[in-house]
Image (cartoon, rainbow, N blue to C red; front, side, top):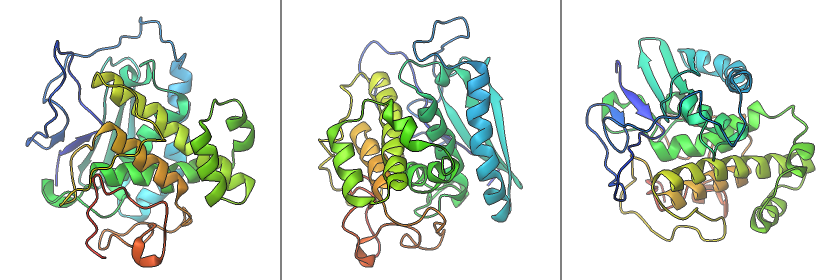
Length: 290
């Protein structure tokens, strides 16, 4: 249970397209070591400053810290603005449940402030995101797909609950598909705005994956048609991850209803509960309960 790390991604600059694999040293990523670095001196197109980096982390920590404590841990988010690493990690050392955030990731051109908030939420999700859990690494961590799902179904909604989300999304270039689906499944303006904002945060992070994997960006209009035979524990494909963020944003189950470590159903949108939308995508998730 000690010192295992789960990265949102670990990256390497390669001449040829990257080969995706999961490492067995307790650290999830493309490779064990990577040389992609974005220094503080780099001119960031996204314009995120050190102050904004810290503020976003504080916003998530303020809301998620008490929730982590209710699960028996002390949330420690380490702010590493000067660090050039394009990554983020979660690890547990006893009751210290740690998230490490790196400035290199925040400086990547695809990352918005909301995208960075999603990254923090994803890492917190490894700690309290519930089932499905990793079947190895002592089983404390929610899988990558589940941590993605937690980010938009639970974490971001609670972090942004008191924001003027209608005003925030008004400044965004929102795809018609996002407007359509969020409008169909979230009647109240506030819920609709949270859905759109969560989906667009997912779009930011999915664009990061696409850029680093040398792929075309994923699209809300073209969901991944893959159906897995077994739940995938490591990082899903880029389109599949965007689908997860979108479905999480669409899910109508209140953010206050937590996920369980013992069952995949509690807190989720699930077929057995009569839901038709907002469920974990089958491109990474194999339901145990039919």
